[in-house]
Amino acid sequence: ELPPVNGDFYDLSGMLSPEDRALQLKVREFMESEVQPIVNEHWVKSDFPFQLLPKLAALDICGSTYEGYGGIQSSFLMEGIITMEIARVDCSMATFFGVQSGLAMGSIYLLGSEEQKKEWLPGMQRLEKIGAFGLTEPEVGSGAAGGLTTTAKRDGDTWILNGQKKWIGNATFADVLVIWARDVDDNEVKGFLVKKDTPGFSVEKMHDKMALRIVQNGVITLKDCVVEEKDRLQHANSFKDTAKVLRMTRAGVAWLAVGCARGAYENALAYTQKRKQFGRPIGSFQLIQNHLVEMLSNLTAMQTMVYRLSELQDEGRLEDEHASIAKVFCSLRTRDIVSRAREVMGGNGILLEYNVARFVADAEAIYSYEGTKEINSLIVGRAITGFSAFV
Ligand code: FAD
Image 1 (cartoon, rainbow, N blue to C red):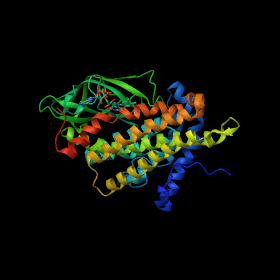
Image 2: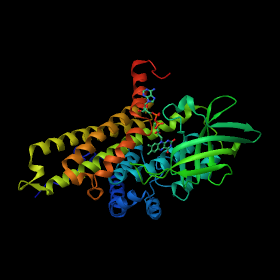
Image 3: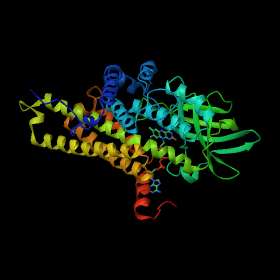
Image 4: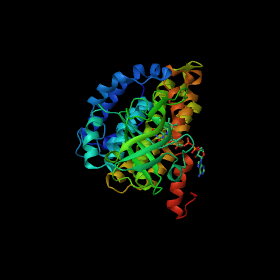
C-alpha cells in the first residue's frame, strides 16, 4: 500500500480547531467536485465559470475577516487556508476570490465610510455584487505609488475621472470598481467607487494571456466619468492608505502561491507513484525522489512561513515587509516547484489534462502581480536597512 499524497507534511491543518478544519475540507470538496472537472475547459476558452458563483457563495467564505457585514467570521489564518485550498485546484478562481474578498471588499472595509460599507459589503459577501480593484495603468505598474496618471478633478459635489487602467481582474463584469486616481488639486491618490453603468466608463477584455486565463482582466477607460463625492472612499487620502489594502492582500497572494505549489506537487507525486518506466514506478528512481523532496522541503517552508504570517496578521502586528517577504519567497519557490513538477511528468507535464501545466503557467502571473519580486524585495530592503531604494 502506497502512502497517501499529502502536501501538508508537518500537519499544519492538525493545529486548526475542528470547526476550521471542517471549513477547510468543505472548500476542498467544492473545489475538487465542482471546479476540477471543468477547469481546464474554461482555462482553454478563457471563460469564467459564472454557473459556479451560487455554489461558491453558499460556502459563505467571502469577506470572512470583516466583522459586521454578513457571512461567517474567521481569522486571517483561515482566510489564508481557504485561499490555499482554492488555488490548490485553480489559481484563477483563487485570484477571483482575492480580488473580490481582498482587494475590492478590503478597500471598502478598510477605507470606506459606514454608509459605503453597508451599501456594498453584504451584497459582495454573498457574491450578488462583484467588485474589482483598478490601480495599474497601461504605462504605470510598479511605480503606482507616485506615478498614477489617471486624474480626479473635484467639481462641486462630484469628481471627474479621466484615464486608463490595465490588467483589472473581474473588470468585464464587476458591478463596482475601486478606481485609484490622482487628485489634480492636492496631488494625492484617492479611491473612487465607480459603478459599471456610469457614463464615460468602458472596459475591454484582455485576450491571449498565457496564465490565469479564467481571470477576466480588462482595460478600463474613464472619459469624463462623473462620480459623486459620496462614492469617494472616505478614508483614502493618499497612497499610504492604498498600501494598507495591499499589505493585507499580499499576505493572501503568498497563500495563493502556496496553493499553486501544493497543487502541482501533489499531482506530480501521484503521477510518479503510478507512471512506470524500465518496469518500475518512476517514483522509485533516486533522481525523481530528489526532485520530490526538494519540492516538499520548499513547500513545507512556505507553509510554515505563511502560517506564522497570518498569526502576525491575526495579532494585529502585520507590517508591509512581513507580507512582502512572504510574497517574494513563496512566489519564487513556487516557480521552482511547478517546474520540477512538470519535469517529473515528462511530456505529460505540458498537457492540461495532467493538471500541472496550468500551475506552471499561472505561477508566472502570481510571480508578477501584487508587486513584482523586485518591488516587494525593495519594501523588505527598506525595512531592514533603513534606506529606501525607491526614487
Ligand atoms: P513594470 O512595473 O513595468 O515592471 C517591469 C519590470 O521592471 C519588473 O520586473 C519590475 O520588477 C521591474 N522594476 C520596476 N521598477 C523597478 C525598480 N524600482 N527596481 C528594480 N526593478 C524594477 N493590477 C490592478 O490594479 N488590479 C488587478 O486586478 C490586477 N490584476 C492583475 C492580474 C494579472 C494576471 C496580472 C499579470 C497583473 C495584474 N495587475 C493588476 C497588475 C500588476 O499588479 C502589475 O502587473 C504589477 O504591479 C507589475 O507592473 P507591470 O506589469 O506594469 O510591470
